[in-house]
Length: 54
Image (cartoon, rainbow, N blue to C red; front, side, top):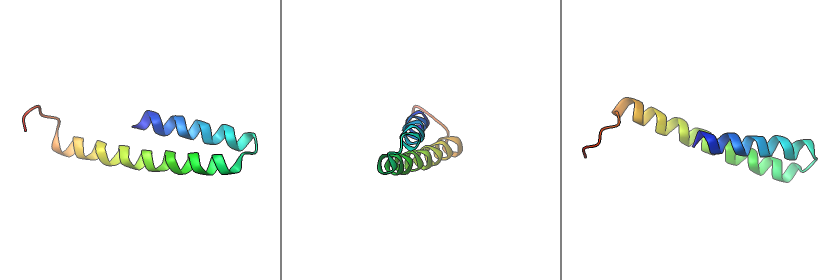
């Protein structure tokens, strides 16, 4: 999840450099959402542990 957030962040930075503000804004929002989801999942896995039993 964090890898996708970094990819969209790089896309946003490149789009911003080339003056594509609409694409840069959308990519930034996607990167932010993926980053938050990744943090939430990491916290859940940390506190709950990754066990193979259900």
